[in-house]
Length: 298
Image 1 (spheres, rainbow, N blue to C red):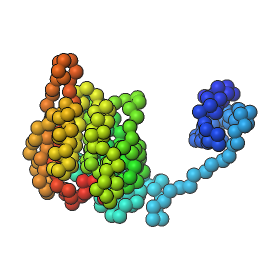
Image 2 (cartoon, one colour):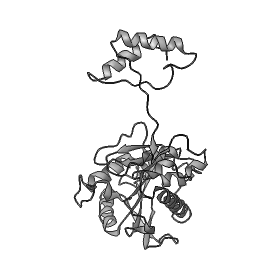
Image 3 (cartoon, rainbow, N blue to C red):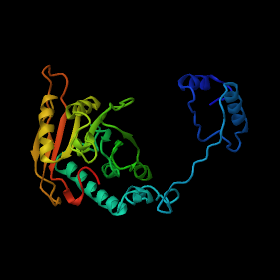
Image 4 (cartoon, one colour):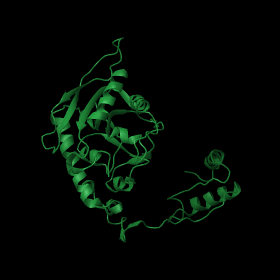
C-alpha cells in the first residue's frame, strides 16, 4: 500500500466515529527495510490529526502455560489439544473426546446417510455451534471451507479453534448472520434450541421460527441442513421445516453411539414451479448427554 497517498486514511477517517481507533498490525509498522513506508504512514496520520501510539499485546497464558509457541504443526494441530483447551475444566479430555466423536459421526454421515461431502455439491460449510471445532476437523480431508461459529453466550472456545488451524467467529443467533461474500451448501448445528435460550433458563431470547428462517436464508438452493437435538426439540424443528418446505426421513442411529439416536436422511424436492429445488434437511434425534457429552456443550 502506498501510504504517501492519503486516500486510504481519508476513507478510514470518514468511517470512524469521533474518538474511534484505527489499529494497524504488521508492516510497515517498524518493520526492517520499510523505513520509508513507516515514515509516510506517520506523516499522513499526523496530517489527519491521528494520534499515534504504540500498542504491544501481551502473550496469553492458561494456568501459567503459554498458548503461543506450543501449537503443533499442521496437520497434527487438528487433533492435538492446544494449551488453550484448559480454559474449560477437563479441557484436554473434552477436546480428545470431541475429536473422536466427530470423526465417527462424519464417517457415518458419509458412508450411511450419503451426504455429498467430498463432492462439488458441498463446498461452503457452516457449524452453527462449533465448540472446539471437532466437526470441521473431521472434514479436513474434504475440499470444503468451514465457518465455525461460537454462539456469544457459550463457552469462549474460539481460541482453541484458531489453534487447530481453523477459522471461526463469535455470533449471537438472535441476530442476522452476514452472508457476504458467501452462502452455504451445508449447515450443521448441534443443540439448535440452546442457541436462543438464556443460560440456565428455559426462556428463549428469540423465536425458533426466526432462527430456522435465518438458516433458510443462509442456505443455497439444494443445500443441506444437519440438525442434532433432543426428540422434543426435533419435533418442533420438523414442524417448522415443513413450513419452510424442507423434508426429512428417519434413519438408524450411529452404531457406536452409546445412547438411542435416529438420524434423518435427505431427499430432493422441487418448488411448485418446478424451477427452484428445495432445501434438504437431516435431523438427528439424540438423548441429551449422548456419549457422556452434553448436546449443548459444557
